[in-house]
Length: 94
Image (cartoon, rainbow, N blue to C red; front, side, top):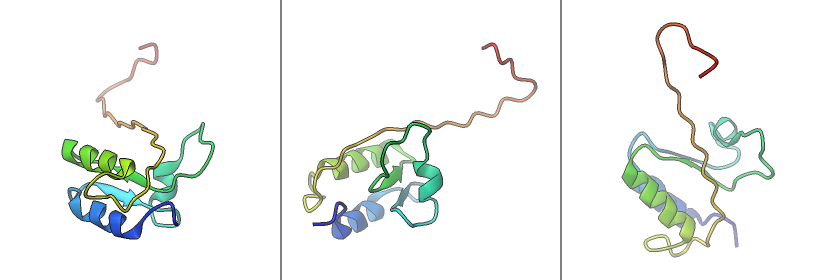
């Protein structure tokens, strides 16, 4: 059985907000979203939520719970990335 069930993945993609993304290895955007200095193994899927409801759907998918019961449980890693634009000089001692 593949690690990611295509039917469940299609259902997840359809349930997410338009700004959320889901990428599999080989798809555009996967490499940059998956990258981390301490990564040990490739991710089966990389999901980037845009809303709180997206987070709920992604966690439900990873747990293989309804409506994603065809999906086996996945190990989950959370990577928080924020880009904050601060006008003017930045104090590196902060």
